[in-house]
Each structure stands twice: as C-alpha cells, then as structure tokens.
Image (cartoon, rainbow, N blue to C red; front, side, top):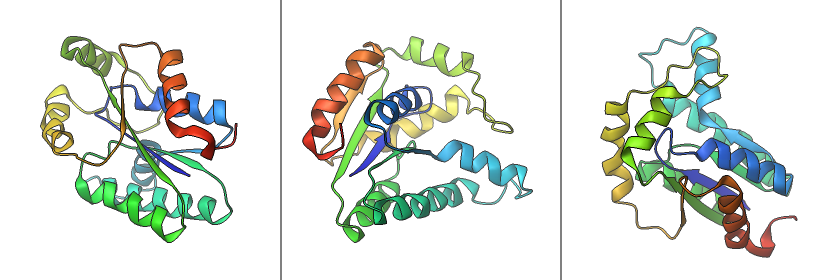
Length: 172
C-alpha cells in the first residue's frame, strides 16, 4: 500500500506520518529532508529542488513497493501533478493507494504552529505563512477520495482514524 499524506506546511502531516510509520512498522519518506539534502549537496535553491525531492522520494518508494512493502509518503501534495505522480506509482506497482489529508481548521493556531516550529532538518528553511496561504487554493481543487483529519484533534485519535481508514491492507 502507498499511503500519501498531504496538507499544508505546519498542519501536522509529519507528526501523523511518524506515528503511522511506528504504529504500522512501515517506512516513512518525507520530501522536506530530501530537498534540504539537495541544498546541502550544493544544488542551488534557484533550481527546481522541490520537484527533484518529489522525484527522489518517488524512486525510493518505488523500490520499497517493488519489495512488497507498504510506505508512507509525507509531502504537501497540493498540486494535481504531485497527486498523479503517486497514483501512477501505485498503478505501476499494483499497490493500493490511500490519500490522507491533514488540515488545521483554526487558521490562528495553524499560523502559530508554523511560525513556532523548529524541525531538525539541517539547512531547511521553513515557509512563511504567506507562502502557505498561497498553496491553500491548490488543495481546495482536490477531488480524489481521501480521509481528511484535523490536527486540532489529538494525534492518538487521528492515528486511530487513519488506521481504520487504511483497513486490513497494511500490516498490523
């Protein structure tokens, strides 16, 4: 199974991804650390490193799926092209694809979380609230089936809901 998490930066995707990975004993691949690694390797930030990070994560996910492993992908996935990338990958590997979107329904709390977060990703520059708001419109056009979770609910509740949504297809 390919589990593709989506949602705006600071909405709680990575926390959910980590807990799902631990609970289900499956690997989690996150786009942000890959992009930061590209910058640390000397690739200029003016290059399409975000796209490159998605492609690298896709390739690693393909390897895991080819071994019969499930995988969680942690990425914003706000562009239709990004979501199509995961759909095509799942199709190529005859893997079930499940989308989970993480939202934070209170904009003031979301902004505080974003502006206050300090992740341990060397070289990664956190986006501004204005950049996050600009990406919101892309997610509004999304019509693929998905589970939508709110990070105002407890992480424990969200993980439990995600596991129910994922059903019997992933190892327990």
